[in-house]
Image (cartoon, rainbow, N blue to C red; front, side):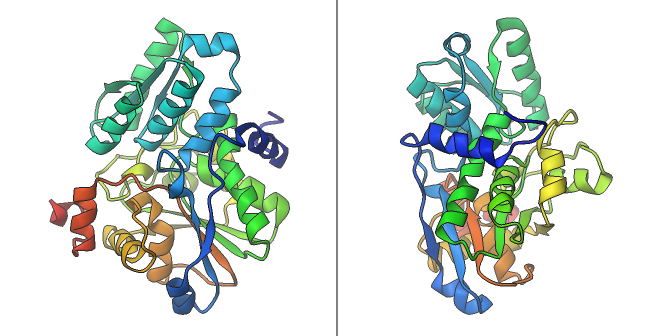
Length: 330
């Protein structure tokens, strides 16, 4: 990797490395959203990845970048679910041991998907920060290789390949809407898009309940936030007080951050189902939700990244039936 940030050259290297291992996902025009917004709206269908989320790109790039000796030591990470599933898949393909540490807030369907891929699961505490304590122990005591969900150059570069594909498929895109959590996805996409199309706006979108990156940007440095139950569970967790890469990249490359209510996120899930015929989780629906709520300044062709589909189907059924949050969907 070059310098203190991930460059477009790093992302191009990642694209070559993961070619044939992950899907090049479609970019589809949404007739319903285009009519609503008065400009072409396209959806990047990243939830079509084999593990149901964009995380497979970064995890695959990171595992393929390891030496043989490092793979023998095994890989470990804390996760809100989707990174763990992706890392388990990449490690299984490479024949490496994988341990995933989760908090008790991670939905059971995501835990089951990780163990189905042969990874070892550790459920620790009530936050991703609690789970990270177990990761640190395994690194210290067993010599495992940490591959965190976002703050890692190979992870960021892998996610950035989405940005390359967006610009290749829609060079005239003026705004890209990206789910925002720890920042690995948006940092990679922003680095790729800004390098190829500097005037394109990058907007990060998260939930109002425990948005760690936005709180850190407001404070001017990484801060801890309380991790709360939310429909956008994949966007939960902190960014790490010792954050090395994503905080500064998001600060420097992202043009705006929008926070959404639980009801707005639920509306995004419903729209994706009824109008786009797509099943997406809350964290993936935030781009659609922000457009529906009129929270985005439309300035031309726009892309919303649909980042994952790994929602518990009983919860999805309650949301599409009209529930507007976890409390009234129980």
